[in-house]
Every structure is written in C-alpha cells, then in structure tokens.
Length: 480
Image 1 (cartoon, rainbow, N blue to C red):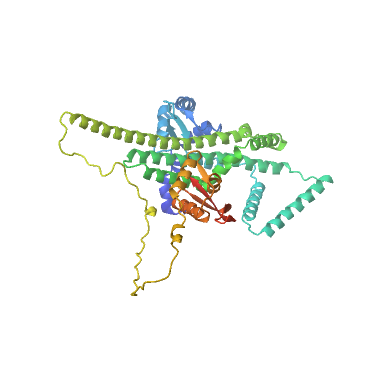
Image 2 (cartoon, helix red, strand yellow):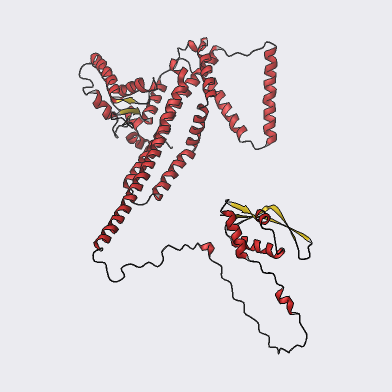
C-alpha cells in the first residue's frame, strides 16, 4: 500500500484503528479493552459482565479525576464503541442466546499492538530475529530447489555439521546459550505468540464478512438456487484456497495433533524453568498459549459453520416455497375438477400428445448416411444351360438372435451382470462361428454392454466336421 497523502487521508477518516488513536477517549478505550480482552486472551464477553467491568473502571477514574469525567453510563460507552462510526467493538448475539456479547475487532487489536510497541523496552533482542530471517530464507531456498543433487549436497552438509556437533558433545564440549541469548529468544517467542492470536481475529473477520454478504444476497435473491450458490461457494473456495486460508489450514492441522500439543507443553514448561526466563517475570498465561490458539481457532471454525448453516437454511426455505407452490397448483387443479364434475364439458378440453415425455439425447441420434446409388449395367442376360446344385440354397445357417437375447435377460434377472463366457458355459455354441458373431453383434447393439479390451477370453466349439476350434476375443459383459 503506498503511503501517499490521499491514501493516508482516507485511512485517517475511515480506518477504525486510526479513529481510536485520534479519539479524545483513546486512553480509556485502549487501556480498558487491552486489560479486559488482550491480556487474559478473552475472545467473547457477555454484555452484563463487560458493563460491570467498565463501571468499576469508570468509578475509579471518577474518584481520581473528578465526577465530571466520563459522565455517561458504561452501557452507553460500549454501544458507542460498537457503532459503525467507531468500529472498535463487535456487538452480536450468539446462536441460542438473547444476551448481547462483545468482541474486539481486528482494527482495534492492531491499534493496541502499535501502542504496546511505543513503550521503551529495557532489553531489545536482535539475534533471534536475525536467526529467524536466516532460517526462513534457508527453508525457502531448500523448499524451492528442484535439482536433486543440490538438495543432496545440502543434506550431506547438514549431516556433517550434526556429526561434528555430536563428536564435540561426546568429548565434553557443549555450546550453551547464555542468559542474554535465552532472553532474546524468549521475547521473540512471546511476541510471535501474541501476533498469532491477533491473526486469528483477522481470519475470523474475513469469514464473517463473507457470511454477511451471503446473508444480504440471500435476503434479496428472487431467482433459483443455482446462481447464488455458485457465487457463494466460489468466494468460499477463494478464501480457503488463498495464501491466508492455506496457511491457516496448515497451522490448524499442525496444532490439532495431540503429539504436537504434548511436545509444545513440555517445551514451555522447560523454558519457564530457566533462570534467565524467570528473571524477565514472564506472563504465566504464556504457558497455555497453545490452548488459547485452539480456542481462537475454534471461534474461526464456528464462523465457517455459521456460513454453512446459513446456506442450509437457504436451501430448506427454497425447497419449502417450491413445495408450497406445487401444492397450490395441485389444489387449484382439484378445485377445477370438482367444479366441472356436475357439468363436464362436451368437447375435448385437454389434449395430450403422449402419455409420457420422449427423451432423445443428441448423441443417440444416428448420423446421416448418404444413400447408395445402384449402378445398372446395360447388359443383355443370356439364358444359361448349366446345371446348378440347388441344395446349397437350403444349407444356410440361421441364428435366432431373439433366443440369445432371451438368455441374456434371463441371466440378468438373477445377477446384475454376466459375461459372454458364462453364457456360453450354460448355452454352448451350436452353429459355431456364425453363432459367436451373432453374440458379438447382440452385445454391440446393446448400449449397456461392455467390451473389456484389457482382458482376453477364449471360446471353444466344434465345427461341422467335428474338428475343435478356438477363438480369442475381448471379454464381453452384459449389464442390466
């Protein structure tokens, strides 16, 4: 984002974080919200509890600064902070509850984080951040390397370094972190843990914005279900497949592993037992920060579940309206039929072309075949005098394809599919190759039949002279 004059002026007038910092009540708002939400990592708080906490804070300020400061009630200030003009709190009603609840907005949390950064720190660590930069750069380079030899060389180099370190440890040379290095790394861990909690709120806000746009479109939609669902699922997939969505999913899968949770708990216990860390007076809540991550991630997952619930309700409402319209049409037909029962019309009042619709798919229509034009030769036929054997006219073999089709239907009544080999075991070939060709023709004309080219089948029979014959062909399967 360019930090030019126009952009900054727009942010000053519209961004909730800037409005908070520019507000005359910024010390009250920032201190109270930081103490109530950020420090204990509270995601959601009921209105009654939050009003009570703010009343205590206002009472203390009035005792110190005078009765004239902050003359309004705590409920008024909370509602004012949750308005669209301020946008510092989010006021909502959870499912199944009639009491309002409040939560921080991502903009407010950004403002609080910036204010925390203004405080001068007694110890500013830089080594850990530099090592983090080097480690991330190394992971990016290794993760994008496509040359196997380069990857192998890097792994061998790291293995040699690990072997050398093992050898030094066996000889009694152990490189330990001093107190300064431990403090440096612990500060980096604490800052990163807090930033992760802020990121959860921003991811949740993105899904909440999508849920709000879905509700608006559903409320104003008058057409069918297909168009809004396609648009909604497209946006949902766009968020889930974005860089932020994929990173959140990978983080959530990593955190949901019980082994990782136990490992993280053991590491935090060990770190908090170090003397250098105890000298910093660390916040004890950092020990259970991974459980705070789980709670924050669960809120994000609930927002996604609310989006799915809204889509389900939309489909149910649409189905109910369509069923109601169908029932109204049916009742209208029944009323019209009862009205005509006593005085039926003499002439035809309704005509149906067919009792059922005829469906013709485009690919089922035969292609155009040009007619064959016969060629008539202008020749004079001469009467022949040779004697021809007429017995050959009565020696042709006729295969009854209807009987073969009947055998197929009979077999498919007992099972869902049958192969040609199984049929021939029950009904051996009586007319040899001609009957086999008839079976293949019957299978090719049936759209439900299958020819498995990868599997071969063998068929044997005896010809007219009693000589055994065998044919190898693809496996043929007849299905219902």
